[in-house]
Amino acid sequence: MPKEMKSMSEITVFHKILAGEIPADKVYEDERCIVIRDIQPQAPVHLLCIPKEFIRDVSSISQETDPALLGHLLFVASQVARNEGIESSGYRLIFNCGEDSGQEVPYLHLHIIGGKKLPSLG
Ligand code: AMP
Image (cartoon, rainbow, N blue to C red; front, side):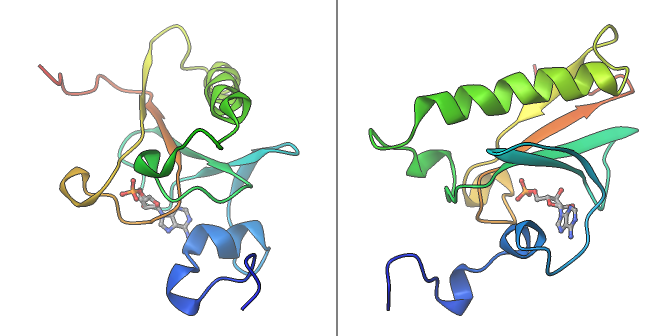
């Protein structure tokens, strides 16, 4: 199997959204990532910033991973938060990683959550 081909078990919902095979409410797109609205929002604003290049999760980041891509995801998150009107009230950015975090989709994505007072993590 060519390296770029994925087995069926590796194809996630985000692969399908990026391929245009299933619809998503896309609020932003550039050459490196998309931002969509979460289908089960946990707050008035709940977005997912997804790189176009597949990375399974934070644990999969290696020396070969482009650090500029990771920085870009954070930059885009800040810009989208501004556009959504939650910059001044504040928001939370989350990368879930692995089973205990509750990660459901094994494709790196950055949650952007705001628009209400979020529970303290402390
Ligand atoms: P995580 O638990 O960090 O893996 O988060 C995965 C997120 O993807 C969850 O918040 C889901 O609600 C969201 N999600 C799953 N399927 C879709 C979809 N088709 N469109 C938008 N968000 C989705």
